[in-house]
Length: 351
Image (cartoon, rainbow, N blue to C red; front, side, top):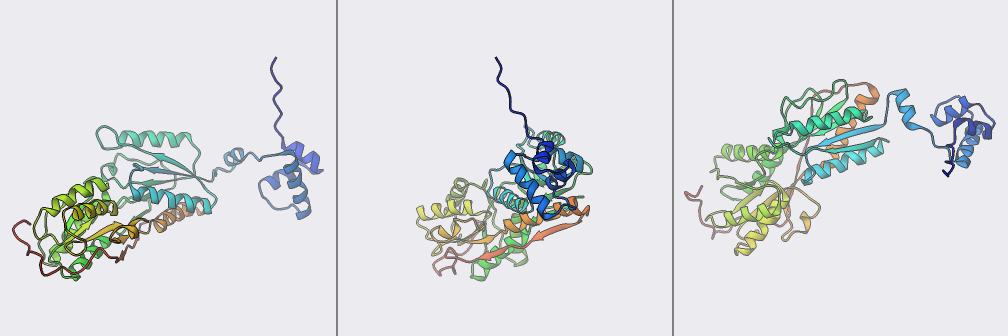
């Protein structure tokens, strides 16, 4: 014998208990006007007593607004992407928007196109008002990545112009701040632990590092590449420790800088006594490294909040802001950098 399923509370039930019309209950449920404070309170008490829950999905279908944002991100295995997503979620919640997160992994050809197409089909089945696409990986930034037409969208970390409004951290500025700081301390040149070649951010930092050294008339060493992880920074640090004359290193992120600090310590090269190190990101732990890490601070919270603001402007105001918003970086000087000692060997043909 089947059990009787409880009947859901309807708007008519609330109207009968409150002694008002169904239209009045609808106005209260949809937070509309033309209802006195006394009547609204009576309806709200009836809703609470009966356990009535407004059907927000039905309301969204009627109004065409779902109060939901899709965030599509190419991987959640980097600090930058994680902190950007967190900032977007915080700002969306502040504006009473829900966030649907879709993490896209790269297809076998590493273009990301197949997985991105799957994400777009997924969004076609879901109810969202707009899309924020975090496109930090340059191999995914191809013409094949087409966003759904007529859907508000904002691009984050693309490092290039798009038809949609975009938000980027000023990677070039950050790299120049790092190089300037080390050169101003008296180092002859700056070696670089670069991020992966497929990263927009890593490519921009490497490009700015190289250009700024050339403009300063300094030797440009070959960069040593890592993959953002402390382990790759450790390997790069061991490579650099074996090269005579290395006195200043700019790591493309704090995690690789952490690995390099360990390598230099193991090789008897104290930081900053023998080698100065600058990172990038200013992760929360950077001030607790030993020594505390000089680094370039990215303002992830500002970037995330700006992306949400640009998207909500399109959704609510039917406004389409254009152009690229660039967020400044900031050099945070701590104890991992100092002037080179006279005992340092001059730069040689190792460059």
